[in-house]
Length: 171
Image 1 (tube, rainbow, N blue to C red):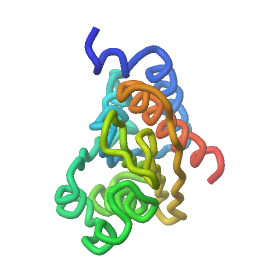
Image 2 (cartoon, helix red, strand yellow):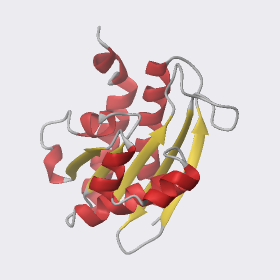
Image 3 (cartoon, one colour):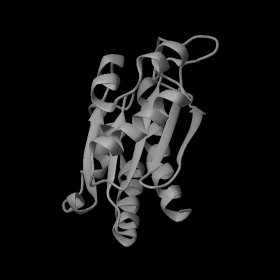
């Protein structure tokens, strides 16, 4: 079984199906802005036939230059705080909403999936998330996940889906 199949396992797909139903009930559409998850959140949402009624799609902005060009993340933000930071994911989420006029909510993810690339202040497994509600607040949070690259990415996808769900419930 390949990495993609494993990450889109039963738990991820169950959470994605639940979120799609919540979005339908709320009459809202979602867009994703992904770095370390490489489109897996959008992949989980679009796994289901009919998901286009609430899913706009996603931006995979793995490099800093893509974050800037596609989502409008500022160069000074990346220089001062790095790609894996609250400041960057906040701008990613807001940039996704700005680029997708028909979306009501955006989720952004940027992290260090490993096995390398970590540092003392930004360890492997550190992932920042942001959700932006059109006409509402943009919120960021971070998690530090343990395990292999595959496990970090899977946990990040689950957390991202749950973050959108939580914003729908608490809006």
